[in-house]
Image 1 (cartoon, helix red, strand yellow):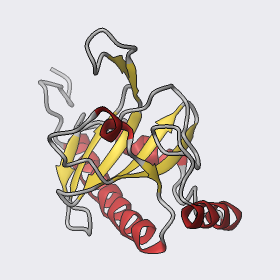
Image 2: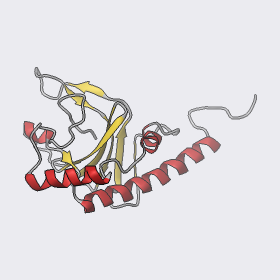
Image 3: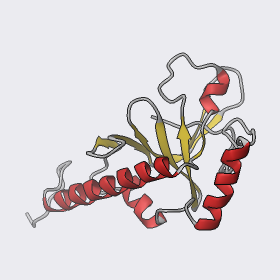
Image 4: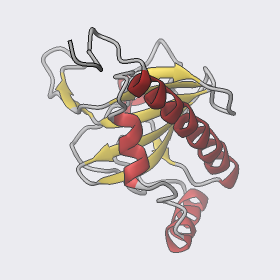
Length: 174
């Protein structure tokens, strides 16, 4: 799973297509920025997921958004043949199967996005970039609960990996 950006920069209060949020959403975005709700997670916790010890790229969790995947490396990608490449940033994607809630990391910053066309398999060009900022409290709460469950899962898996290394790693001397 990926989220698509036209440039290697955060979108902020604009959609992935570069348009401004609707009036009410723009007001809610401004209020969230003042309240600190745009940055509810620590970058250290986000990196814990992206660079987990057991080298996983996804899992399922018991949470409001149970399907999770992540991209630990950003890349440029030719989405439309013969057109300018698009940017696939580092990200953690949570989904309920219909819609995606995404923590997007570019450089040392992150933002929270929701992508309503995530599960739309017959996308037109504008659908690929139809994501926008998370501004509603119920959406933010679902993401917070899901991220907390994911962190617990990652810590459990990392602890298990430390005790039982895979990929032929040796823990004792030969």
